[in-house]
Image (cartoon, rainbow over all chains, first blue to last red; front, side, top):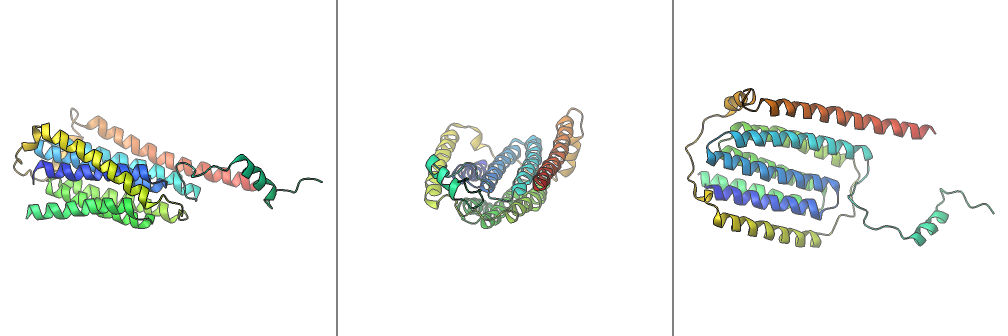
Length: 114
Length: 172
């Protein structure tokens, strides 16, 4: 199999990873998209190393795997501590009027003094 | 035979990537991601990188994927995920851009016609010597161990700090 086949698969994997990073809101999906992008880059590095006849590409890929492991550990440690679905941005902000109304209707709030 | 295995692994990689992007449940996406990782490991074997293939299986499938599954299990499901229609539109446009650029680059590049060099032997011993050679990759190797140590201590620190503030808030 020539170099072009590996680069083609890697390009498709990179596109899917970018789409997964951009299109989804849940942080876990974003992390999985980043892993897909890193895998595409590793595949490119190893394919070029094979057709270039050296070992440097494989060593670069090993360092990238190490950094991916550290990144996933930190990111998921941070997420697991929060114990709720963590999004990148809120889907809808409450309007000011809504916020005032909910403030007075929440049973947790003490009733206004009469 | 090589050709057959290449297309098998390519189908595994691309199918896993599409599944990761497409499934509505995060656990299904994580298992599709496992298919992608295994397919990439198989491609490493085809490319003669045996040590890297084993590393890929050990670290990605055995480490990162298990971490992702723990992260999923520790958090409640997210019901308000973006609809598949928007995901499909974005995916098609991004894939179109990437493939257009790839074919434009491939049409002018000269390294595409390079013939495949003869197979290289086992690489594990050569990679180990390269890591510990002073004019090779010794400094990046030591820096990588420092990065891993920082990640270890940092994750423990993040976990401890959160727990302390939570206990303090419960007391008041």
